[in-house]
Length: 152
Image 1 (cartoon, one colour):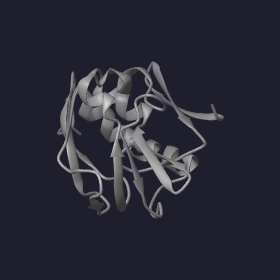
Image 2 (cartoon, helix red, strand yellow):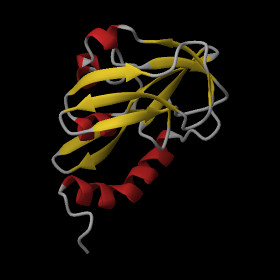
Image 3 (cartoon, rainbow, N blue to C red):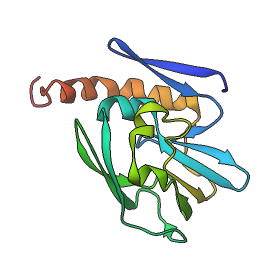
Image 4 (cartoon, helix red, strand yellow):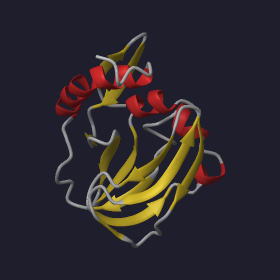
């Protein structure tokens, strides 16, 4: 595995391999020839905790816009829509996750990859820029986690 950067999340430290780019929606995009393989970052997996259901609302060969809704996920902590981390053509899903999404929890940067797509990667962040983004959103995230979003 490539060198990693880390981000402290309380007692947990999220790791981010430097061989891929990152999206503000907490997905990674690893170049693989003319494709990007995409998945959830360790930050997202930590916030979701125990993913147990994954569903796609688009099919392979679909042209996707940046932030287009592509599916849904359910976990111990949240139910959420999933959005494309970049614009391009969806080429395939990791079909094994539909039957058993536990790989998302156990190996988010490996067997837990979600889908592959072709695109130019515009708008993706370097690992360093992604950590800057996390530092900016972490205070609000902590309040949300603790149920204190409306308190000042």
